[in-house]
Image (cartoon, rainbow, N blue to C red):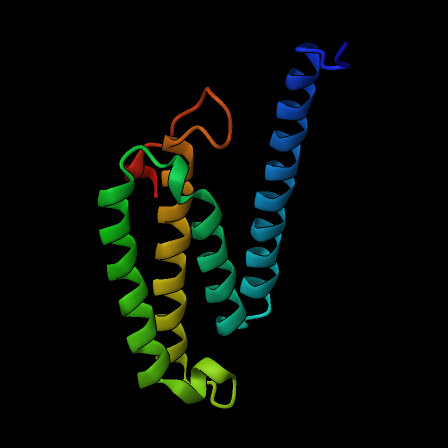
Length: 131
């Protein structure tokens, strides 16, 4: 006789959801810390990590991939163009503003995609015009 109990499946699924929520939360915390420290490399890395673990939940993953690639390319170009500012060596206000704006745009877009995929639960929907 087997020890298998179908009720156990519900608990496993619950546990996996909790692990996933914790992982997503850790990436969101990493994003916040890097943003507050103006650590552009870590901010971008944390945004990439968040995208990796959430993209499959987006409403239209293929369309999202194109938008993500465009935003990622813009940030990479800025990182190369203003490498001293990106690394924190130089504090040029105009360069900081351009990099910061591009990273915030990607972050905001990711959160809108996550909301569309119900990663924050069902309920309030962001109005993209609010961002």
